[in-house]
Amino acid sequence: MAPKTSEQYSEIREIRTRQIMETALQLFAANGYANTSISQIATKAKISKGLMYNYFSSKEDLLKTIFEQGFKEMFDLFDPNKDGVLTREEFTYFIEETFYLMSRKRDFYKLYFALMMQPTVWKKLKIQIHDIIAPFLKIMEDYYEKKGAANPALEAVLVGALLDGIGFNFVFNPDMYPLDDVKKLVIERFV
Image (cartoon, rainbow, N blue to C red; front, side, top):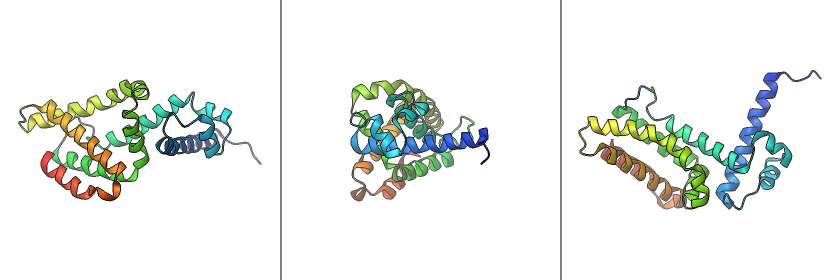
């Protein structure tokens, strides 16, 4: 058998990284961050504990990477043409896709909301999350300013809090939460 090429090694590394992150996310969401060890993640991902450290320097590094990817996925939907200007169509698209992500990525949102309630862990992530959210809020603030809102910054914060609240309720009570109806109402009232 011929030796692997650098492209093959890169592909293997990418697949393994994704596998570790998905496994960690499932365990963090099910058992909590503090109650999940690197050993448990390695065992479920079917790799050695030592190999885990070739991909992530620590459990905290793994968690931060999961959050960076999750937030990037969500905020890449916002202002899709990246011109810094949010149109009504782009805002509607963002709301629709955010609701889709809530239903498709429940483990991520379950972990996100659970960690918000754990100040010691949340504190480690807060600056990183603020850096990701700040540009999003500014673009939304500009959107509301153009619409003539009395307090555009407050409107942007309200929509962010509303989406968090909807996500929280849906993640922890999906069978009793009418996500599609709520989505229509959010678009109608806030877009």
